[in-house]
Length: 254
Image (cartoon, rainbow, N blue to C red):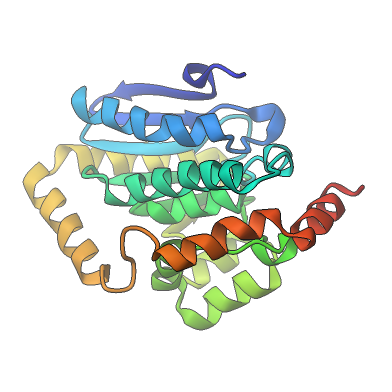
């Protein structure tokens, strides 16, 4: 088992917290332990005085998705439910977190990585970033809350296109549809994020927090917190279908 303190790293610089997904050899594929660590790391940021938090990835990628090798080992409903709860509860925690959150996106931002970025407040991408949600290619079901968060950013038609096709889009297209706030050259991305996050950290804390709450309330009708029980069954069961088994083997090229 990997050390969760190594695979999800933290630091606070000038009031800005940095959370780094650190599995560069796996393009920062997000494992169960990483999903479990994310709420802990955010709570630590809050308790240690951060005024804004940046998510980023090591080694030139944000996150290539959930860990498919780990997902391939799911062989019963209880394990599927455990995996799904770790992922969905982490994303709900990110979305509901009090402090402003920025995703600094370089390279792959796919699947669970894209969902993590969408749960943040702002997204800044490098020109070589790529985005996609390959759930249809894997034959698994995504929940209402994550789809709602994506839909609020890009609109229903684009959300459906992204979800139905599983296609990967460029940073430029992601910007044109509202998925990211800004696209920068690779060499300029970190400086831009440092400048914006520092400005946010220096601004009025109460004003920013209440603005974030107000925007979230405006969105809350569509993006509820948690699944209806019957929909959770559909979501979790999708990890156990023969269709998923066939498709994940095809995904790996077996």
